[in-house]
Image 1 (cartoon, rainbow, N blue to C red):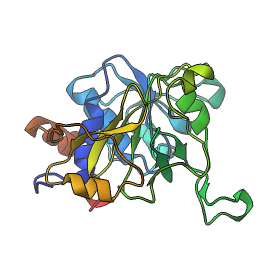
Image 2: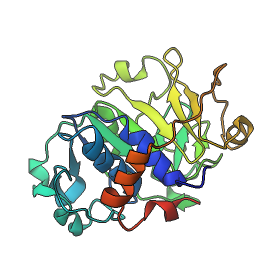
Image 3: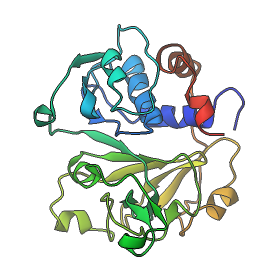
Image 4: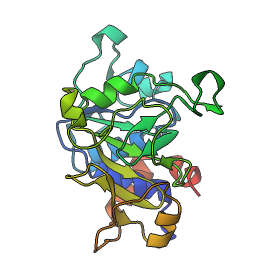
Amino acid sequence: MREDYGKAELMAVVLSRELKDGELGSPGGAYSQIAMAAIRLAQLTHAPNLSYVCSATGYINHMVGKKPYPLLPSTTDYRNIYAGCEAALDFRSMPKRRDFFFVGGLQVDKHGNINLLGIGDNYKRLKMRGPGTAGLAYATAIAGRFYIYLAHHSKRLLVEKVDFLNGLGYINGPGSRERLALPGKGPQLVVTPLAVMDFEEETKRMRLKSLHPGVSLQEVVDNTGFELIIPDIIPTTTAPTPEELRCLREQVDIKRVLPSMIK
C-alpha cells in the first residue's frame, strides 16, 4: 500500500465512484464510517444531488455547501442530525426506495450471501453472536444494488457458505433471486483492504476484479476461504486522485478517522 493514503481511504474512494447523481440510498448502521465517507465524497465530487437515508436519525441529504462534520461510528448517532440533515423522519415515513445500500458482515460467501447473526451451526449455542439482521434481509432484497465492504480480508470472513443466511446475495447461484421475485439486482462489489471483487455473470460467483497497490494475488488467494474466479488479466485498483484525497481529508473525514481504522 502506498504511504500517501490508507486502506480505508482507498476503500471509501472505490465505493464513492460507484454512486450516481440523483440516487437515494443508505450507508447502513453501526461501524459505517467507510460507507458514509464514500457517500459524502461522491456528493462533493461528482454526484451533488445524491441523497441518503441515515437509519433512525433522519433523512440526510448532502454535504454540498454545508460545514464539514466529522465521521461518526454509527448512522444511528443523533449527532448525524447536524451533518447535513434536511429532514428528520419517523420510521413510518422512511422512503422505501433504495438505489444502493452498503453492508458489512461476519461472513460473506462465494455468492455474496451475508451472515450478521452469529458463528456456529447451532443457533442456541453460537460460538460468537453478531449484531443481528437489523433489516438486512429486507434491504438486500429490495435495494437496486448493494455493496459489501469488509475491514479484514480473511478465511474467517470470506467463507464457502455462510452459517446463517441473513443478507441475500445470489443465494445458490444463477436464477436464485429471480425465482424469489426479488426486485433488487444483488451485490455488485466486495471491497476489502486487499482487493475488489465482483461477480461473474454466468455463475454469480465472486471474481477478483482488481488488486490494491502492493498486494499480491497469492496474498488474496491465501486469505480467501473459497476458490475465487481469477481472470487472466488482473488490474491494479485505481488509486485516489489528489482531488479525491483533498476532498476526503478536508471536507469529509476532517478528524482523520479512516486512516486509523485499518492498519
